[in-house]
Image (cartoon, rainbow over all chains, first blue to last red; front, side):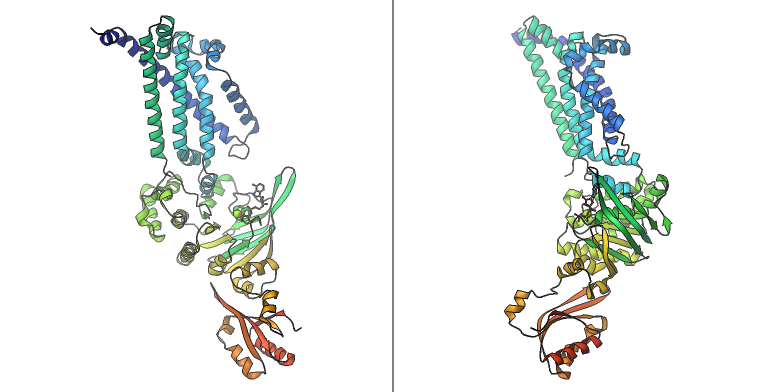
Amino acid sequence: MNRYERFVDQWLPIIWKAVLETFQMVGISLLFAVVIGIALGILVVLTRPGQALANKFVYQIINLIINIVRSVPFIILLFFILPFTKAIVDTTIGVRGAIVPLVVYTAPYIARLIESALLEVDAGVVEAYTAMGVKTRKIIWNVILREARPSIILGLTIATVSLIGATAMAGMVGAGGLGDLAYRFGYLRYEVDVMYATVFLLIVIVQIIQSFGNRLAAKLKKD
Amino acid sequence: MIKLEHVTKKFEVNKKTITAVNDVNIDVKKGEIHGVIGYSGAGKSTLIRCVNLLEKPTEGDIYINNQKITDLSPNNLRTVRTKIGMIFQGFNLLKTATVYDNIALPLKLLGFDKKEVKKRVEKYLKIVNLEDKANNYPAQLSGGQKQRVAIARALSQEPEVLLSDEATSALDPETTESILDLLLKINKEFGITILLITHEMNVIQKVCDYVYVLESGQIVEQGSTIDLFTSPQQPTTKKFLSTISQRNLSNSLIEQLNVTGSVTRLTFVGESTGKPALAEVSKLFNVTPNILTANIIELKNGVVGNIVIHLNGNSQDVNKALQYLEEQGVHTEQLRGEN
Ligand SMILES: Nc1ncnc2c1ncn2[C@@H]1O[C@H](COP(=O)(O)OP(=O)(O)OP(=O)(O)O)[C@@H](O)[C@H]1O
Ligand SMILES: [Mg+2]
């Protein structure tokens, strides 16, 4: 057996498990973060002064919350909200324990990206649909979100990539994943090959996600 | 059909009040095309946005088809709006939707069934002559074509009135012509009442029955297009007219021509345009007219001709000649007296 085969034999199952854990964490937390983030993003745009549901109070509260969460680095947030995590999923460790801080970290980020995507939409188009007698709710779903789709996709791609980065740190609470693997074996036990393999895999995954996002956005964008 | 009564719109900006529209009255009868002309910042957009309450007037009332719409509930306002088409300078199409979907989507959102949507989209694409572009995206169209899509979108709701906010301002002269022809066509074929705003006199000239001149939010002059083109009163109106026809000779030009005696503008309108009045003048009186500049303007409902002449002769004969011309229905205006 050469070095390569030995490495595959010994590490492949472990690395594969880490990949799955990463996907699991990213997938589940992305799902929650997208739902919360899009809702917050829409709300913050609609409650803006001069918009359909203009409400200074709600607008400023949401803005404040988003800003506070966005200013805390993930590694600190992870420990800072431990009681909250415990209250919600009844544990603070493992994949379940990691998902709560990942969602709390990513949702406000997505909200900001959605906000800027929605604000990019030409106000004239919205006005045209208002003038035609279309209901505001329908305009939000069928006009604003539709026109913002390419930018939203690009935003979600960015958010996903940064989420993958955050999952690496979530290894700290025993959630596993590629980051945790690189840290435990690559750094603590100095298994250089494992470190290289993990980094390589992370690069490939990020590449794939980014080019998929770019392509989808380009396909939806028609100008 | 479209009636504005004492409409005023004020904006509060930095604790200062801007009166963008000031006590405006407009009355467009069914099937007519009225135009509001004014310079940038005159309040044209604000005014037309008040008509379908995109902008809520601070004071005054708006009636569409004799229904007062200024105090309707949001639901009833939406219903009224489905009968008011609007087109814009920037077209306002969905970038991410094909030409077909741009017309179909509003219909779907307004609750028309699939069959009806398809029928209408096809019908109105044909009317604006864009059947072959149904599957193109707006980015693949020229400005004129985009405006045609916007017009088809407005027509597809089969509105009774159409509002146009500088619909041709982003287009070149030839494309402007074709869009204006289209507006005339839909006005004639569907009897749609049109209120348009513009800063271009040729738009008024070509399509409007009646004109309002807007300045600093106020209507400073109004009248039928022919009247306004024949005897404009306000400086702003005169300036707008000068943009499409040479009405005056500058003093320096008159000096250069080295003429002595009076320089007069004759305006022919309606019947008088057909008469050889000038030829008769030289036969009847001891004067010789010298034409310095002349033009003819074709309006929607008639023709207006302008001739700037220099009349050679003694002042008595000249005065008699001018009086004769007035009697023949020719408006005369002294541009420079004797000196
Ligand atoms: N939403 C607004 N808030 C404050 N001021 C406004 C608003 N909309 C318009 N105005 C002001 O009202 C005045 C008239 O603007 P408006 O857009 O109606 O002019 P316009 O005649 O359409 O000009 P243009 O030909 O450049 O489009 C301007 O002084 C403008 O600054
Ligand atoms: Mg304007």
